[in-house]
Length: 330
Ligand code: SF4
Ligand code: MG
Image (cartoon, rainbow, N blue to C red; front, side, top):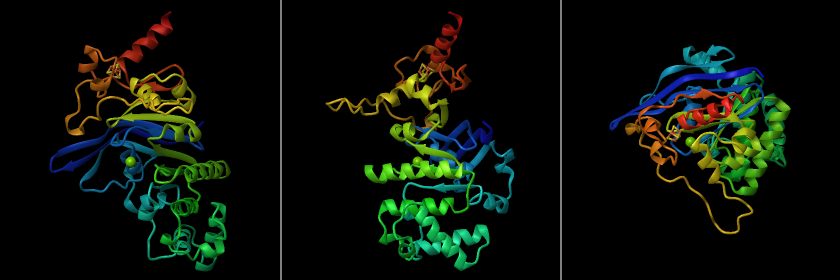
């Protein structure tokens, strides 16, 4: 399919008093039109910083996008003026976050806030925008929308607030929706409802979704492709089926083993041993080597590049690359 957004060699750092934190360190990924790409990894791996970089919402200072390109329909977003970027944000690309309370304004009704977004981007009158806000609330499954439109955010449950955020994000008909842990703060039942809603809306509206999550259950339900990040880098990429069936990177393997299985009676949650490295003191060679059961001397010295594999994915691992090469020759 055709590529909507392509991130090339993205490097985003934070300049703190303790030193420079290279939160994202040479990330390559792409999202095709209409697909859901999940970006997974433990917290601090750079997945949120990647999405905020795409939106150009990195707080600066202390943050700085230092290198790379973010091509949206072929245009490099990093070269646009702030005014041009504002037109892209909330028109072509919108974003929803984990905790909608922080993105909704407590002193305005949800109707006012959705209408405001609609007026800003579609140039409708206040009255028409309000009517459209009611329609949007109905669309995201809020019962009695003509009443709820007058609610303030605190009068709604967490699940309802997330629906409002989705309504706002979609009111401009974006080509790309970035969803950063959209259901993490919600209980399981509500989480399933919101994921359902996102799937339905995606099918109806044909937008692409960049889904940031640490939850592989969510990935399995939502995504067509997966990018796995570790310590500021992409370590594996592939279609969801290959990743779950045949993970190539030891870190991906470890993540998959950490999913609790329904058929396991006892708690046998496997966790990857060790901790995510301090980004100010990255291990030499492969950044995963201190935690990797397959690490060799080469791994401790030489950083493995992200290499394409035949099936169409990519992996950054010396041992996986060697194994694949052997499989090809025999
Ligand atoms: Fe493990 Fe080496 Fe592969 Fe890194 S390159 S993941 S240390 S086997
Ligand atoms: Mg995050």
